[in-house]
Length: 219
Image (cartoon, rainbow, N blue to C red; front, side, top):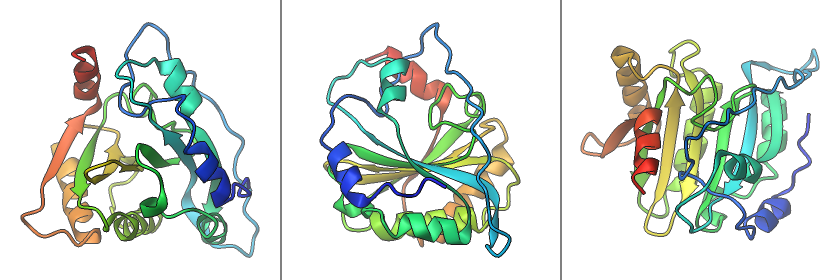
């Protein structure tokens, strides 16, 4: 497992303005589907149901970008497939609240890139939760532990999750495969509300990736 990506490296990457977050443009080029090697798990470790990859990115202030530049801006932090591998990686990471603004962590199943154009994401969407400053680290940890522990109980629908550090607020998103499956998206919403301990009045928004791409075209 590649888990030697220390927190100091994340800090260095945070000073790199070479990429973008939610300004991907849809063009004629396809995102190549990579086939990463499997993550090895020792017999004495507690294997997770799925293997995961953690990515890091930093957004720049320009409103126009391309799939290529967004892809290049994604930095693979590490992969894991057991409880022990996760904690070995997680314990070396900067907490989201300590990251610079306009940076993101992306936790996705191995084989799914955190991009709208990835085959697993094309027909999906995401639940968006906006948090006031000071809550993001606790909420992010609660969320990823719930994902790894299969608390959402929606089969293979969960693709991954993203935490985004922004100036006025922080944002947490959960991506799923099938936006048109309203019962499943509602179940994800209710579980997300529970694991984040959100009040009933908390604002939550569901957005399909197709909607996100259309918004990019209107920039």
